[in-house]
Length: 290
Image 1 (cartoon, one colour):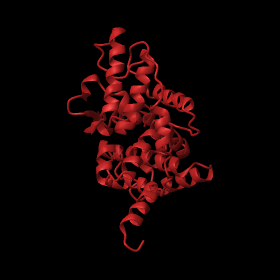
Image 2 (spheres, helix red, strand yellow):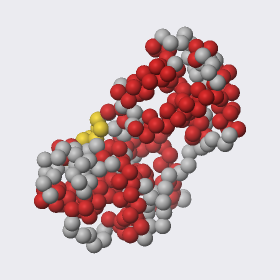
Image 3 (cartoon, rainbow, N blue to C red):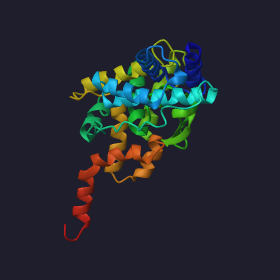
Image 4 (cartoon, helix red, strand yellow):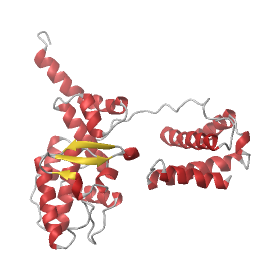
């Protein structure tokens, strides 16, 4: 079935627009499953084989999140095989999902954000680019994958919005603040001097090519260290911070869902746990017998 596997990953890449890292993880998941089957024909796989596989993963110590991802891979794989006519029945349909514990995401305090963004700034190309990246993250709450794919023409300075291409190539419009726009303009001025003005991508590396997600992660860690932030910080931390601060200042959950590009409100609801203190303050101020 190696041919079917190749067709499956080609489908995920071209039709489903899966990222490089998701494809890499799915290839690992499928390899582990096929090794577990010991050359059993995929046409003969039943829901009992899937359950035994999940039990095997628990026995070898895989986390719930990893098991959930491996199951998602198998669901997609067998659904694809069914669509292609390679199997007659999808054995994953009788399998319940893995219930995940929802950890509260890390986020920065208002003071931490001030330490990160409101400090003396250098005037060179790299420093201005890095500051524009940090300001854009905190101002928009977009994913790192969305940030590195931004183009210069996606920024509307007059309306104060940015066009973002999210998961599944879904397009959404996100507001962007004045401080972020000023940082982007300053960065582009510095870029112009280096002759990178005609490049389509917004954020480029030192050689003039579109910056990578890994490089953005390193940039954020570097500036967090300089700001004295004692936390393992990542691009996702700034996304969490964006959402938490909006909710803490009174934004409604549905609006934050739209801004983050979440397909389901349940995904956004994790942030409500982080704003309990804010809700308590509102209650104590508004309720006559609090």
